[in-house]
Image (cartoon, rainbow, N blue to C red; front, side):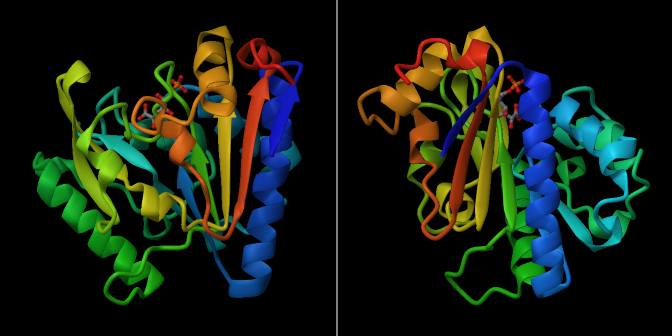
Length: 244
Ligand code: 6PG
């Protein structure tokens, strides 16, 4: 489902309501809410909104368990860290217990080992058997100007991963090894919400939603939940080239 909003504030208000709705439903049905957070800068304002008076008391945060769809292979206190961004804008203001936060252990500075450990963490939390994938109640995703999502960048190896839950992905253009959930793990979620804001994303969003199906060139096209809901939330700026 595509929803277009006049501005990022209204997009975030809708996303916050969906977060609370999905979370309370999960807590009611399973006693807990598992959410994989998006990195980058777009989600910052949503995270801050969730800690505001309007939302902070609308869910039992101690029953919310936080994961990360991807991470940069930097220390958790590094400015580039997605964990650091979420901690500053969401987890610390909510005083979330460490037991409720599952970050990629990048202090190992060994992307391969960190991704293996993260997969084990997910297997344990979701009590997975061999070859099973975690089923997050919600995965939040951003989208880059090159139509990447999480750290699944165009023409990178991780796009073809069909068995692993989490991998290290060599991104040549960044000259970096990124850490990311794979498409099978992402697509097993109950709910996936893309948050896309700003004119710089307009070309990519048009390609992803209205362009030819080219999954290696436009990786966000490969986000397609096997049994779940997919929401593309965009502000007018990001949606300005769409035919809709
Ligand atoms: C990351 C993110 C990445 C991000 C997009 C959009 O680690 O950077 O997971 O996929 O969502 O690059 O980033 P912005 O929101 O900063 O534009």
